[in-house]
Image 1 (cartoon, rainbow, N blue to C red):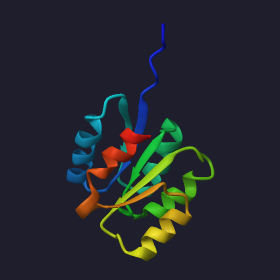
Image 2: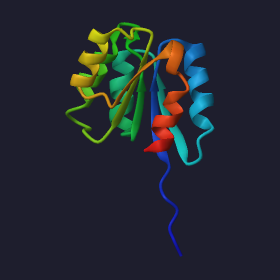
Image 3: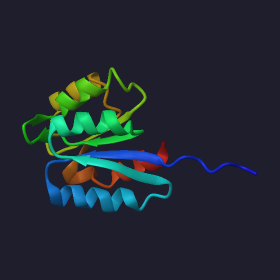
Length: 124
């Protein structure tokens, strides 16, 4: 008898509550995925991610009190296997390059690629 695989854990870092709710709904529709935490500030994100150790982090670039780079730089060395999906309105090439160089797996534009978050998580 095959053991059921563990759920894919996801932590959402987004300061806009309506956007966060949309992400919870979108990601919650994926079979085998569990949302293990949410945060709207870099400090809450870092402590929550380190506490829950998720497989995936959906990370907004601009946050209350800082930005997603603060989170990425704090977490990446400690959790190198975590998949970071940056989802942002700041889709300019310099932000993409900075995030990817810091260890993001995907960099998506909120206005045109919002649904791709689901594809990245479901596909991995």
